[in-house]
Image (cartoon, rainbow, N blue to C red; front, side, top):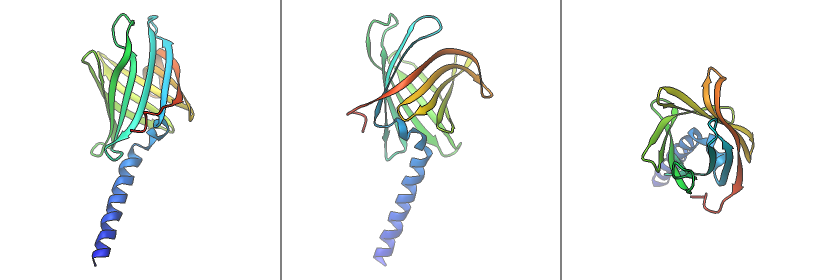
Length: 171
């Protein structure tokens, strides 16, 4: 009887872990790699970012740590953002929070379209979209702009994130 109880408990834990992991499985390709991108914004300022993604808390969270410019003059480069992605079981959506060195927080949702990640959030009066468009296991096209009904109305930034192996991305 004790063996049956242990087996049932292990089965429940296994199913629970699997369902939590599959809700965030779209991020699996991003884990264990360091993603780098460079470009210019529409206003001419430089976009330079390095991001590492990791599962945390038994695969119930994705932690994203990004380096970028840490001052408005773009003269200092270092840890700029720390983000969290979490599957919300009530709304059946992936939500995200991105905290930056300037004291700001960006909050929104992540939609999945095949292997693409579509982040949407309010920025002032505008609904902004960041899209990670899958190219291959080491490349994503990245766009920031106004994306409505599957069409780009305006693009503020367009570049590619390319992966490099990272020793620190396992945690």
